[in-house]
Image 1: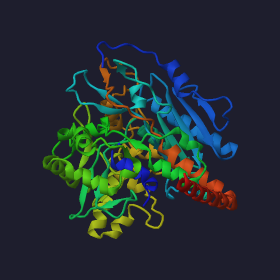
Image 2: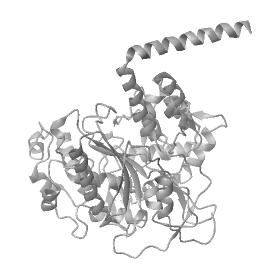
Image 3: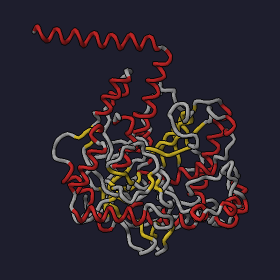
Image 4: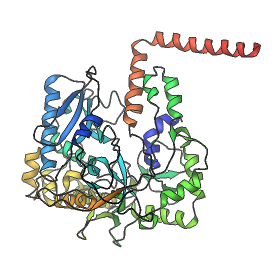
Amino acid sequence: MKATSLLLSFILAFTTVYSKAVDININDKIISEQLNVSEEDNSFELVKSNDYNFIYKFHCSDEGDYCEGIKNNLEFAFMTISNAFEIYQPIVFEVFVDDLIGKYKYTDDKLAGVFDLNYVPLKASESNSSTPYLYPQTLVKQLKLNKQPKYKKNDFIMIINNWASNPEKRNNEYRSLLTHELLHGLGFDSLASVSELNSNDNSGGPLVFNENAKYAIFPYVLPSFNEKLLEITDITEFKEQLDDSKVSQFLPFSVFDKNIVSLKSGEKIFEKLQSYYEEVSEKCLDGTPLTLKDLNDKYRSSCFSKLSNKTQEIVTSIIKENYFEHHTLGILTNDGDMVPLQTMDNTYVPGSSVIHTANPLYDKASDLMREGNLDSLNELMNNSTGIVKKEAILKYYDDNYILYFSDEDNFTVEEMLEFLPNNEKHPLIGEGIIKILKTFGWTEKGKKESTETYYLDESFDIPEANGFEYLRKKTYEIEAEILKNPFKYIIQKLKNVFNKIIESIESIFH
């Protein structure tokens, strides 16, 4: 299988300092650097929230009223976030409202998502022994730093389905959904993704636990894309050059991963792997250029086998003890609470497991399914539609439901607030979520700003995260051109073959 078709799963699988702190006003810099766009580019609308510190570039391939509705829903999400956390510096991102199923080949249940979060490596002190962690750029801009990094053009990219392929879903409740996605953009996201080694299935889909299988977690990596890729119009050439995109370094865990704990022991699961990225870099980067196409299952398996036996044992035990059973992992907050995260019985789902708060109803349903108690299961949800019943929400949901992995978009925000004992201070966002994000470094609304200084680790050169632009968006644009005029594409391919034959003949006679 070509490496390009596996880009996102590989990125997930290889999850690719000065003294005194200075107060830096970066508003003007963010406006000029992050929003440095040509006035001639009319493919988007630049939207600045009048009441909240959010700025976004808006790409909407739909009609006016629908697009305006999405912007109104975003404004509601901005209000919800801003009422919960202090946002001292603007959050800058791009929004694509489009046919996610028909164009970008996402699954039928994809309502929206946040992709390409940009991270900055920070340390607690300038000591060489201080462990760096990746902090989301959205958060880094709110912290006191010893030195300002060069910010990437986007904090993240948000995609929203316009349901062109399924119009009856166009009236879904988007306000809670977009609030959910923005919370991911604030850093509620793990970079430690499980992959199965020596597997024939590299689709990046769910992993069903197999006692005989070998699993691994790798440090995060990001490929560095050549900007000239965006000028290529030939699909074969584009994919070949995309495959050759360079990967130069393995990166530390994120601040989210730093605080993941075992709910059984209370211990941070990655405590013994703080320098994991260094060992992987030492054993798996031998000085030869590494490209995206090299990051295949064979490479991962070979890389993992080169690590020390102790490291392999630690990684394997972390996975088998925590990632394939529900109610095993949580986040340890600064006040000592452990807020449960969503893990699943016998299954690990990339993009869902661990990066959401635990849904007690899901755990109950899992137990009932294991017991074969379908009658009780029918009391929780409508099996034909998959819609959770109001009675089950009232009984099982807690106030952290906004970050459950399945969003109840069949109910309005107002209905959910009526159903649940939400945090009165911060409607929609539960107390557990507030505590988690405060642990990462966010300041709760109305609270005193932290005086802690974070130190930029300049030993890393992390490229812009833009897999959406180079994989999903660019590939679709080229393929759409081919479909518009397939005859022209065939002729061009024949010309390319003919030119290569001529070049071969000429080389013989020179």
